[in-house]
Image 1 (cartoon, rainbow, N blue to C red):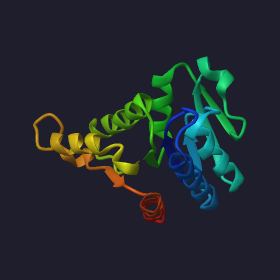
Image 2 (cartoon, one colour; image 1 turned 180 degrees about the vertical axis):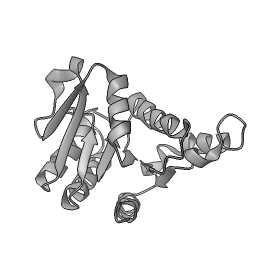
Image 3 (cartoon, rainbow, N blue to C red; image 1 turned 120 degrees about the horizontal axis):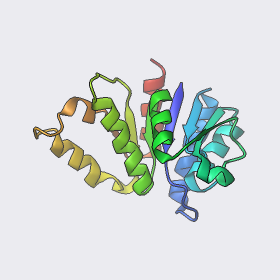
Image 4 (cartoon, rainbow, N blue to C red; image 1 turned 45 degrees about the horizontal axis):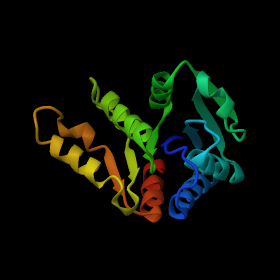
Length: 180
């Protein structure tokens, strides 16, 4: 199964975020799944990929040409794209499950873009699991829930977002989804 992970490339993050990334990567590798991620050799991106690599999993880095110098050496495959939009499109098209880790504007953009694609003319069954550590994404999840009660965003695909508040919940949810 190809697990897309959206997360920060920021360095120097708190230990709890680094441990989450490591535990997720270790789980992906040990379960024999493929990591599909932004391909950067920095921050949570690299920590996750390095853990997948150490656990014997397969890693596909998807990175825009302009960031070629930042490609993570642990990648088994590299897909170069023209820009960030193409990177998102590739990952959305090729992913089976999506995990939103702690991150910034880029991570939010990837999450919302994934949901947007899922709502366009199909009944996309793929889940999006949000690692909502310490309630980082509470307001965003609440906004999505509120929108399901408006005429602007009907809920069936917005409800694809699964809220995992701990590493244990994240890995348990992934295990239940990938064993199907």
